[in-house]
Image (cartoon, rainbow over all chains, first blue to last red; front, side, top):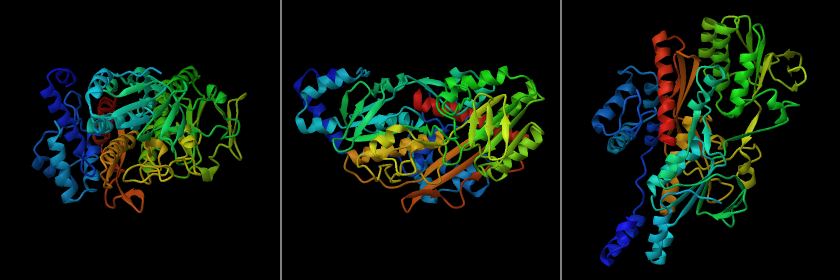
Length: 102
Length: 419
C-alpha cells in the first residue's frame, strides 16, 4: 500500500480515506470462547496437524459436531468436556466465526 | 536500542503523507513485555486485529524455550531444540522486536524504560512476564543453589542440567523432587516429570527410585496419575504429601539433601521446584498485589491497580484457570481483542475461555484436565457441568490417543504462536 500511495494524488487521497475509515470501524473480534479453538485446531492451513481442521468448514457442520459432543452422542477425549461449557447460541456464534476463518 | 521491523520504512513514508488526526489513529502504540505463550500470542493477535497499530514485543531472549514437553527433554525422549522457537515470524508480520529487558514502568507517564535506558511511550501496556522464583525458600535454596540442585521449571540450560544429572546417576540412586505450594506454573507438570523419570529409571536404572516431596495434600488428575503409577511403575515412584511430612523446609547443598520436618532425604539427583510469584516487572509496575500475583479485570485483563496496563499468562490471577501454556495462549487472544476494542473506544464484553492441559504418564499414555471458564463477580470460575478429567478407567488406546493429541497440540500451538 505504501508503494502505491507514493504516486498519483488521487490514489493517495483514496488510500487516506480507506485508512481513516478502517480506523473508525471497530475491529471484528471473535465471539465468546471462539479464540481458544485454534490452540488445538490450527486456523492456519500451513500448520500440519493430525487434529481435525475446523476453520472454513460449514457452520452447520461445526455446530452439529459441538452439539453431538455436548450430548455425548459423539465419542471424544476432550471435546465432550469442552462442548458442555457452551449454550446453543454460543455454539452457533463460534461455528459461524470459525467457519469464516480461512 | 535496535528495533527490527520490515514495515517500519513503509510506515514512515506513509505517516509523512497523513494529516495529524489520522496519524494519531494510525499510530496507537501497544507494548507487550514478555515473549512466552501469552505475550507472543497477544502481540500477534493485536497486529492481526489492528494492523495500523504500532505493536512492540519486548523480550530479552531471542530464543524462546518452551516448558510444555520439556519433561521429555529431561528424560532423553526429545532434544532441547524441539522446544526452541524464535520471533522471526512475528517480526515478519510487522511487530517490532526489541531484545532487551524492561526495567521500569511509569504508569502515570505511560512509558516503560528498557535495560539500555531507552524510554518508550505506550497507549496500552501488556505484561506477560511469567513467573519468578521466591529464592530462599526452602531455606538455603537460592539461585546459586540451582546450579547444584536444578529447578528446571524454566526450560533451557536448567532442563539440560537435570538431564545430565539423571544420565550420570548410578543405578540404585534416589531422585528427589521438591514440589511447591500453589499457585504455581503448570500444576500437573511435577507429576508428569516424576512419571517420565520413573519411565526412564524402569528402562535404564531399575534399582533406582523417584520420590515427590510435596508441599500440597492433593494435585490435579491425582487419581489418574496414582492409578497409572501403580500399574506402570510399582515400587519406582513415591508421592509424599504435606500431611505425611512431604514439605521440604531446607536444603543441604554439600550432601545433596532435602530436609523435611522429620526426615533427611539424601538424593543422587535433587530437583527443587521453588515457590513462585509473578515475574519481577509486575511488582515494579505496581500491578502485583500482596500475594505476589496480579489481579485482573476478566473482561479486559486490565489491572485494577494501574490503568492501561494489562496482565496475562502465569503472572495473572485468573481464578480457576491453571497457569498453563494453553491458558496463556487463550488469554493472549482474549486480551488482544479487548485492547483492540479499547483502542477503538469500544467496550469489551466478558467472554468464556477454555483450558486443556495434557500430561504424559508414559510416552504413549496421556491424560488431560479441561476447563471452560466464565467471569463471575470479577473472577474466572468453572462453567458448571463442563470440563473435568480423563476417565479413571480407560483402555490403553484412549491413553495413547490422548498422548498423540498432546503432541499434536504442542505442534499446533507453537506454530500458531511462533510460526
